[in-house]
Length: 151
Image (cartoon, rainbow, N blue to C red; front, top):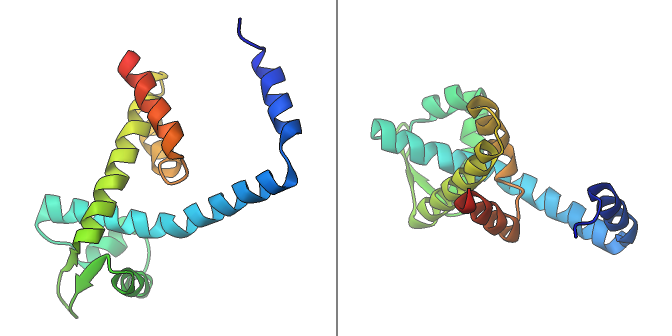
């Protein structure tokens, strides 16, 4: 027998300790910090795959930001060991960057398939998956994947 979802949700909310809530908030903040790097790395991998190269001007256009914003983010990605680049040249992912791009793509595909299996239209599912993929836990991803494989 299944419990009433509203009662389960209410009980879960009431049982959350302040420490557990603080931990959840910290997790969300950490995910937001990583979200930008993940979006850039994923976009760089896509540009390289589709066009043979990733140029800052293309990143700026796709991300809807200015060239200085891209330059600042690329500096951070280089410091973090995710990309290599030279002035006025294409951007390349390091092995670490390629691994992160693969991981992001995998998470995105699982979330997207899950949302589509719920009956969400493709455009909304794609847009929502882009946000959810950065914040979903490994356990939730496993459950999403299992759900999709059953349907």
